[in-house]
Image 1 (cartoon, helix red, strand yellow):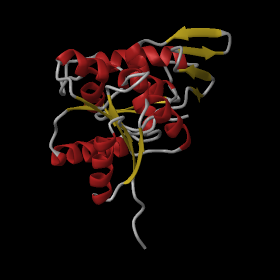
Image 2 (cartoon, rainbow, N blue to C red; image 1 turned 180 degrees about the vertical axis):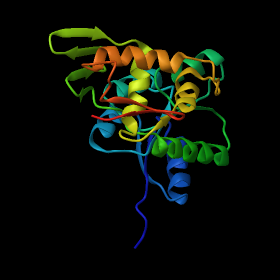
Image 3 (cartoon, helix red, strand yellow; image 1 turned 180 degrees about the horizontal axis):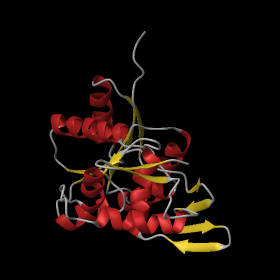
Image 4 (cartoon, rainbow, N blue to C red; image 1 turned 45 degrees about the vertical axis):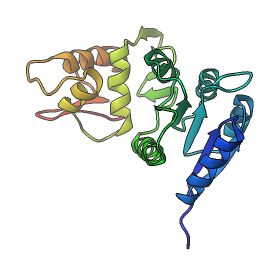
Length: 231
């Protein structure tokens, strides 16, 4: 049985470039769809799940930046590699801020492009799915989009770091998340025994989520390791 081919969407309005990308990507084993405009890219992404999207910046009508923004606004999570003849730093930053995963400046080497595609797909496969917009933990209902917690008649606001801690615990619900992993991923800090950032935010989360914060039932301490979440 042959392996299922990964689907790649190429958004490029120059026919020769689009054909060249399609031929080379198909030679590498990808199932390739090409479209010449941002509008058609949005339509294609609505109906098909792609492993990667190659998105040219200089497109007719709506450019690659606007297309990228629309795709992310629709909830399209496929990694996006932007292709452009521009090399200015500000353009790269703008693309990344709008949700692109990588940026390749024309002219580019085919080997480099293939390597970048493989890398963003690999990272995408490894990334855990985001938590649901609403999550019930005991008596508390968490609304991640608005950063609110509703528990009975009481309502609390979650800070940025509280949300991030909660999301990490939810990813591996029931398993222990090491304190140093929380420090590293959320605060970008290597293991510092005296850094109380994680512990202070866990205390704050318990006050908002637990019915009895002094005897937590959901956000549990695993002494010497970290924390785990039990619903």
